[in-house]
Figure (tube, helix red, strand yellow):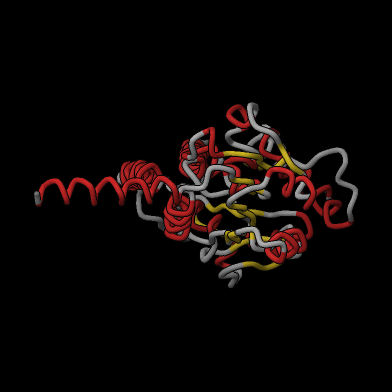
Length: 288
């Protein structure tokens, strides 16, 4: 009798869990798209953002091909009658507020600034969509890859090559950011830290020249980038740096969102550092 009661209780709990898992999820944000494409069941996804199908920005663009897209317009979302809406905390705010007032369940996801926060976010989304086990598997696989990489990356010293992200408008990042952590874990010194930047900051070209990073990193600019901020990246000094060997190209889809693609980014940065260390123009002793 006791065994039968326990069995029935387990069935009821399982039934409750299955019912709780949302079955019509709409994502309004590229990064929440990536999480859904990573571990949601296909039938759970009602719609994802239009950026999810752009291979320049979306790591899982091939997986996204089968799903309807949205442009974060309220009428598009309402037409799907979602039981869960995922969006970023700092974009599509007006749409998210309208949908919340209309009675829909909207979860706003922050942009993580550390790998630890990425792991927490993966688990958070996994719980929200009823896929905790898959999310935990993703986290475990990422941590295993990180542990393997850590054994291959030496402790930095004065001769370790230096790297700096230098973006439109002279914006750069220090060690207390997700990009800064990727730079550190791949074995580079971050030149922004030498400038006293811990999180986000700006550097003019004169300061950049004084720091003399061995390499610069950013995503490629495009012919349509006409803003004054983008014009800084076309300065003759940086054009010279962008010659082969001076500028590291890293696909934007590798480091714009959280997920396994971040480990790919670390691996690529590690390989780039090793190439610099093996190059003839890299100083072997900077102590003098």
